Length: 490
Image (cartoon, rainbow, N blue to C red; front, side):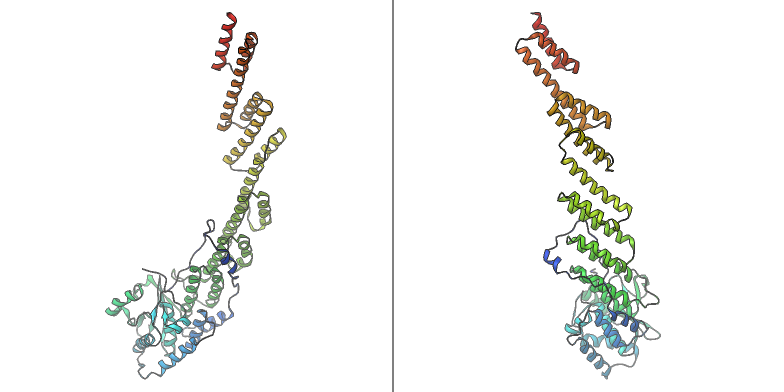
């Protein structure tokens, strides 16, 4: 079953760390969100916050919620149709019959094509395209003009009307001309599914449907417009529309508590955060952080804003560090320190310190003083143990290679042996030490070979005896010793 018409659920959007590609043109053309409710929202909140509002007020509020700019003939067209209904000689006096007649009249006069997402009343008036919300609101306008008492109904994915005729409550599926009292009509069941794709929820299934006041029904137009805008990528529209919806619903004495009807304050928070997430998607992390300052007071729940701030600043720091600018990243973090609590600052500080240590290590050329400076800096860096070991090993091996080149293998071997004593076991250091020792043993063998080949056997014997004091268990050097001893015996 498709779920886009009727009541449109909130689109939760918080994919910050893996942004999709956004064109530069889109980023430039996105207007700034509106951060104040339209004053008319409060006016219509007062006018519609009564059990039976005037039909003119419902019409004006619905056109406003639809985003109608006052141009065109939308309002006049609906007013003319309403007047024609009231003047219709065939309009029954019996309330139940009148309700059914109005549904049929609405389909003859106004409705042309069902369109799953067409929630706006002005568009309905302009081209006859409708969905469950726009048709339900138009029915309310006509029925209130005809002095009927009614309310809205919302389900998980649909909206319709309930008519109160005194001794009976009658459901009206406004998307269908057969929708009057649908639970008792076979032809309704046959056609309704094919027309809209939604199933009727009978009155007895009270857990799957909730009553709406007329005010709340009109507010669903704003909910649907928000969801439509976000699906189209126009996240900048969400905050203003959510503020309008919150203002429109602000005077309710008994707010509806339903999983099918978004709480206006929670809905506003989601819209604010969604717009901020869109800024991050567009690579505008600095603006996203400024957005927190501008908008967080409108939804003062610190938890989500803390998460969003951390994510935005994390993204900004990662982008900066990927360009090799650790100093710039440090400056950014320090500049935004006020936005973070101690825990989040520590996490981002560790990220920057890691980059600083990598940068410092990468620039390291060796030397006793510089080596000790870096080792001390690493010791107090607070890096994760694995990362600390990795960088420390890099420094120790860099210095070991420098010593080997400048002073020879014995000093380099001594350096790595001291490193193991100082910092404990290390597979990389131990592996390097084996290579150094092998290189030193090869160096001693080559020195022996030069003397032996020159037939200076006494010097060769003295050389190999000293070599075996360094590597008493080396088989090559032991072979060299045996070779020179046989030469001396000849």
